[in-house]
Amino acid sequence: MPTRKKIGLIGAGNIGGELARLVANKELGDVVLFDIAAKENFAKGKALDLEQNGAVLGYDSHIKGSSNWDDLKGADVLIITAGVPRKPGQSRDDLVAINLPIIRDVASNAKRVCPDAFVIVISNPLDAMVYEYKRVVGAPKEKVVGMAGVLDSARLQLFLAREAGVSVKDVRTTVLGGHGDDMVPVLGSCTINGVPVGQLIAKEKLAAIVDRTRKGGGEIVGLMGTSAYYAPATSAVAMAEAYLLDQKRLLPSAVYLDGEYGYKDIFMGVPVIIGGKGVEKIVQIELTADEKVMLEKSAKSVQSVIDVVKKAS
Ligand code: LMR
Image 1 (tube, protein in one colour):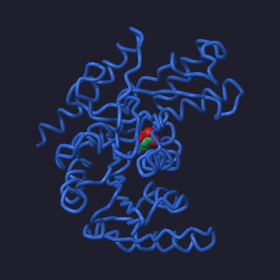
Image 2 (cartoon, protein in one colour; image 1 turned 60 degrees about the vertical axis):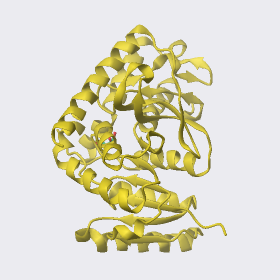
Image 3 (tube, rainbow, N blue to C red; image 1 turned 60 degrees about the horizontal axis):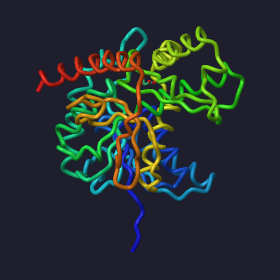
Image 4 (cartoon, rainbow, N blue to C red; image 1 turned 180 degrees about the vertical axis):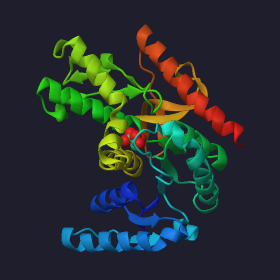
């Protein structure tokens, strides 16, 4: 008999709540909104509010707040936002010491209750946290991804659309590398319905847009005093949906590289195809010499945080 999918959301904060709302609204499955014991009632309250929301909107997903890992047994998808978001003045990398033990705890519990789940990590510093998650669980590389590229590409897409005076729907973008200020917006692959962006937007404007994209998360932290959550949640749900519905979507995602793009034993953003088997293919695109240099710089930044994580083993 067919059963509903189970989607575990680890962390019931701003992103967790928005993730639950989107997953339920799309009826991708039933949701377990998990948080630590001290925040159990908060998770339960949010879950109840979202279930009541379903009565108005007409969705039937069950949403359960919990601090009991056993409720995550057999989850099909886990989206991990556990940890602390940054504050103004902090970089994502500044969160490594505080978020590392949290990710390790999440990974060891997930290994016990849902080792076969497709896992999307959002916690920062993203590339190092998803690396550590995979290491602790020992999960196959197809089943563990980090959400960053979809979000960074969306930011680039918006800024290009506004500058060109066109709909966001017609802009296609790719951002590679680590989820930090060295990320690599690949302008050569960015088009407005097939027209290279360089033909419609002046060079200096493009340079300013690249810079704004790289600092896109920090811009919001500076304004709100905490991290973004609407666009990050929507980006992760697009990835979860691609897996659950076997959509074969080509989405930039942080994945484990084993020689692709010349990198090994590192998580970094590259274009991948996500379908029912998880990461079904890593797509290798031609990069210019300049883009290769930028990717190398970004990889070095990611590696330096992964090295901190490895030393803390
Ligand atoms: C983002 O890019 O919005 C997230 O990584 C959160 C942050 O603090 O930047």
